[in-house]
Image 1 (cartoon, rainbow, N blue to C red):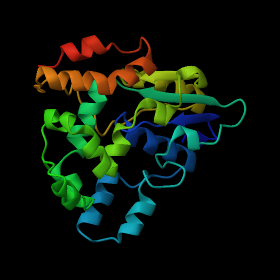
Image 2 (tube, one colour):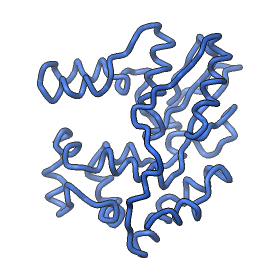
Image 3 (tube, rainbow, N blue to C red):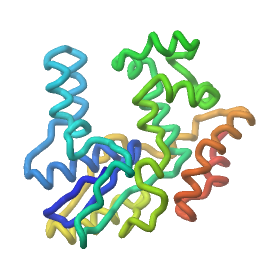
Amino acid sequence: MPFVSRRLGVAFYFVPKVACTSLKTWFWEFENEEQAEPQERLTRRFLGKKKPAEDVARRSVHHRPETRTRSFKSSVPPPEGYQSLAVVRDPVDRLISAWKNKVNYDTFKRRDEIGDLENELLSTRPSFGEFLENYDAYRFNSRAVRVHTFPLEWHLGPDRSHFTQVFKLEELGTLAEHLSGLADKDVNFSNKNASGWVGREISLTADQKDILRVITKVDYQWLGNMYNQDESMARLL
């Protein structure tokens, strides 16, 4: 579901684990001309029970109606004449980032999913290889895992023809320049989850690599020549 900026004439489609928090925050703050409370501060309040959960959800940039993560098929087409924009990421890189950030004990505990996982004999602290071997089971038992690993088609539709322009994550500077021209002001993004090649330390068996290749194949097909699956797989140990 896109964020529609009437000030910019832009419909922006967010993808989890692709600078999603940074982009949602910037667009929401620009459109509303006020500062959003940082997600990490809201999370700390929730864990410390300093604020009721419903208040945290209401205030979070991820839970406001206009910035919630919803499927492309449920979205309303943007107004005529609006630009449709999105940012994408190397699929292997994105899946590893989702594992690091969402497939872990702290996330499962916060979301009260420990019991469901243990009932299925799934590790609550899986390695990336273990996650791949039980990919469907983790997605079934954890909404956070499911949402952050939906393929690009779920978020962005069947192909790129809908978009005015699709930027690579490495091209955030180019996106900022594009939006600067539309906003008539300098645009800078603060990428709260910035990292280099996150797969550098990942070690997988041959069978696990085969699973990873199958899982990410559909996204590489969606991206066309924007990223190369063979090159990304070759960087894994």
